[in-house]
Image (cartoon, rainbow, N blue to C red; front, side):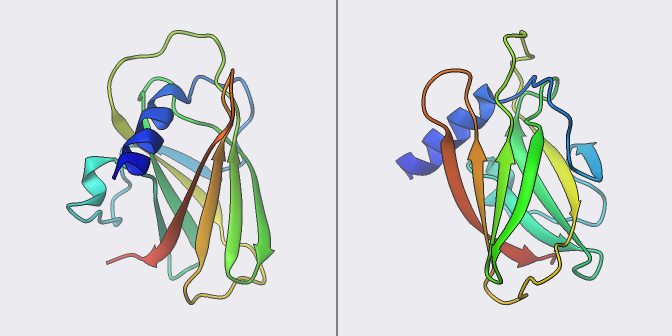
Length: 140
């Protein structure tokens, strides 16, 4: 549980990056059609969901709604593992709220659809990056 809370705290600090997003779409909140479980709604860790009949991947992160994390790289490491990197935040001041932001990506070619994991790296302005790995699940 403490690792989850540390990940959530790190996500609050990530945001306000000047990097360009590689997401095909970024949505404040959770997009219509994506359902979060009661546990996921707490925002303790990011959520990864196959959407649009597995043609897209939606990743929900938590933090400042004014300065959401910016995804800069998505790569297929293996048929069972995707790597997603987020840019370090800028020095800009962000809102102190804690809200979801959803990032939508085209599903990479070569991915298996059974037991796939998403390894995320959240770069920091200072210190070590925060790494979080979550399973990618089907939308309920």
